[in-house]
Amino acid sequence: MRRGCKRLQPAFGKTASDIALAVSHGGRAWTARYAEEGNPTRFKQGGTAEALFRPCRCGSASTKGRFFAQTDGTAHGIPFGGQKKEGARVEIRRPRGTQDILPGAVEAWQALEAVVRDVFERANYEEIRTPIFEHTELFERGVGETTDIVSKEMYTFLDRGGRSVTLRPEGTAGVVRAYVENKLYGQGGLTKVYYLGPMFRYEKPQRGRLRQLHQVGVEVLGSELPAIDAEVIELGYSLLKKVGMRDMTVELNSVGCSVCRPRHREKMIERLLPHKEELCADCQVRLEKNPLRLFDCKNESCQQVLREANVPYIVDELCDDCRKHLDAVEGYLRAMDVPYRLEKSLVRGLDYYTRTAWEITVPNFSTVLGGGRYNRLVAELGGPDVPGIGFAAGMDRVLAVLEAQGVSLGERPPLDAFICVADETAEHTAMAVLTSLRRLGIRCDRDYQGRSLKSQFKQADRLGANFAVVIGESELAKGAATVKHLATGEQRDVPFGQLADRIREGGWA
Image 1 (tube, rainbow, N blue to C red):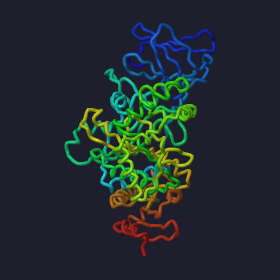
Image 2 (spheres, rainbow, N blue to C red):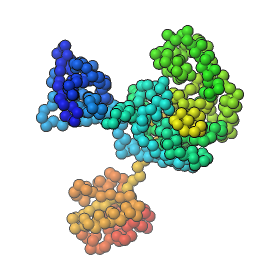
Image 3 (cartoon, one colour):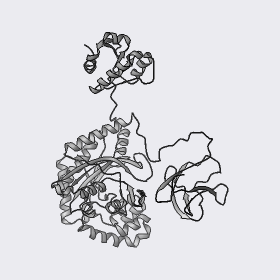
Image 4 (spheres, helix red, strand yellow):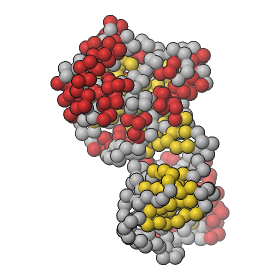
């Protein structure tokens, strides 16, 4: 039992098939209810233990899960399950909604990351790295309390100091916080940055959508000109095109500004208030706090209410400045040969967007990449009145789309050479040769499991090595290794000092 948990006592509910769990701490009883396999349960303080959602028989091994008791401000893991025989090994599996990116698959990720860096750095974007967790207030203020991300999907917890922190669900808020905190605006000119890294959202896992997702994105801070909107859109389009994605559609809209949004808001409330009870619970809250987000609701009945109430699209209610801005963005996109279409219902899922909002969609996968302008976010987070724009793409989803489209991205290159040790007398020399070749840029490896020479040749072949380099007592006497070209079977003696050059040349001709 970890510090803070004095005693763990199983208790039983009213029926023999229900199991309850109580943790006694400081004279208080803490109860836990099983929420979902592989995820933290929810707790409350009470006088008795509650029955778990998942019933099982006492002593059975059918319940799998891990319960966390909130006692002294920290979460304590309590493995819970059926009785095991003493000495039995318990397999620990990865949490639901996560993935292991194994050798053989990670090469595609590395290739995508390489393309990302190449495309962005050619456009003069610099990499930025921000913390994986931030103060919860950052996302509540920056992303918006009415968004699904903040209200339903964030991984939020109290640290040991009682502070509320959140695993980042998206990248923009953290980048803007770093921009303000480090006073990057004082450097003058534009700040153009990109990022790659994991984000965390508690949502239903599905193809291309996980609870630990990996995003790549760009942010530009310091310009409100429509030309930078077009650059950012083109950058996202070019990135996906360069990795081989097909059938992409760029959808574009404007969500207005502080001048035209209030007028549109009043119209929406006026027309929807009589139909409030017909909306889903989330949209009833949105109607009061941010009505524009109703267009983002995935509930078809809510969209039907919008149509029947004849609610106008924001793009049809833009002020003159927003209209000119949108027209200019469209003009730039046409000049840059970026195909797009106007999507009037597009509003994106985050509250900080103003004016330009856009997405890139692919059939059967919906949105692959999306972004927009956020002219008020920097000031909202304590900085000066600096406009910004950016986009983000889920790398998991990009790779899932490419796989579905039959696009192969990134393959592990074969070994240049495999060192085969013929006998123990050659061990030190073999290690010296191996190290020397690696330092000279040669991809090579050796056996570390005591295999026979014949088995080492087989291992070299399995690894796809171009050459097998044999070093034994006779090779030491000659001062030359026996080098075999595994594709042709031809072999030659090559002096140790010439190995790197001959392997690099691909032979000895």
